[in-house]
Length: 182
Image (cartoon, rainbow, N blue to C red; front, top):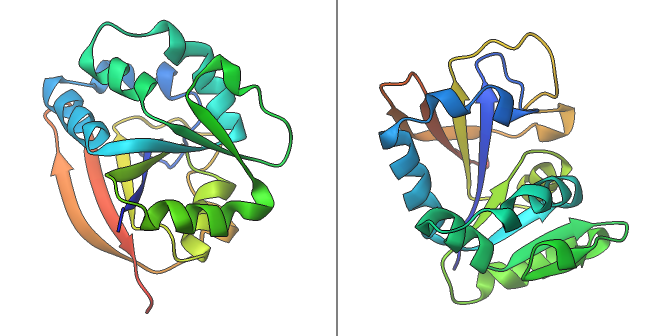
């Protein structure tokens, strides 16, 4: 069975918006290698509509390196309750919001590598609530932002256990948590 891994960048105080403004200077060689290995271990991306639309503005213009080439080549599954222009960044398939649990459940059962979720929002919460999310990979950056969009919301509530922690010289820490049934 494939694993679904939610990989999200956050500030020390728990905000996730605009990571391009505060994360890039901390992505040292070791952190980049870690991200590359995580991404190569996935053969699909699962994204909410807002995350997909934001990424679709940048990623199609990236390429020429193994990381970007892999991300651009793998299938993207976009969970949306309103229309999405998937021509912007393919290959992409829309999963209607009401079909999330059944469709993603079937994707998990298929042969293949991990499915990577980028971003954190209602999609991640719904996956965890349905028992479909296998891991949170939370990249904590040594930045205090003071305000913004929080990593977790009241709907995020679920017990987790720490599975791993990796610290990089830049001060970035990747915490891996797995939902539990306690």
